[in-house]
Image 1 (tube, helix red, strand yellow):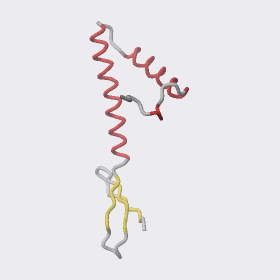
Image 2 (cartoon, helix red, strand yellow; image 1 turned 180 degrees about the vertical axis):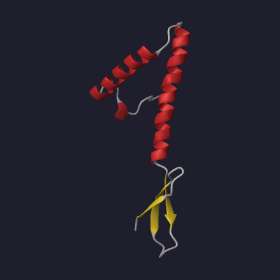
Image 3 (cartoon, one colour; image 1 turned 90 degrees about the vertical axis):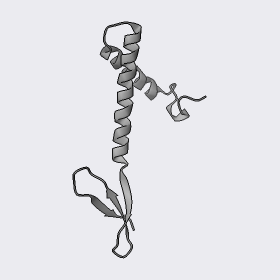
Image 4 (cartoon, one colour; image 1 turned 135 degrees about the vertical axis):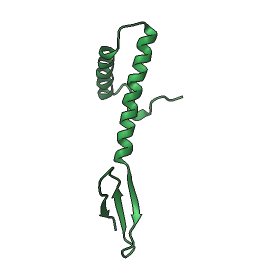
Amino acid sequence: MTIMPNCYETAKPEIQKLLLRMTTQLREALPAGSFGERERAALALTNEVVRRTLEQELQISRIVLVKCGVSGNLYRQHELGGQVPVAVRLT
């Protein structure tokens, strides 16, 4: 079973640096307490980081193709919350 795809191999120097920074910052952010308490806090913090990262990815990718009634041209429409959508002609 592969946990991490090959493109994220932990042997890569840039991934090693990232993991070291993340480990150091996480350790500094954990509250005092038992191992179990620290483990729960670590999992909650890292899950929140993943949630926020994926939420940002979804917001960035929220682009839809719409068929415009004008000459059958396709437009890309970005769904911006509370703002007027921006359409860019694709064809």
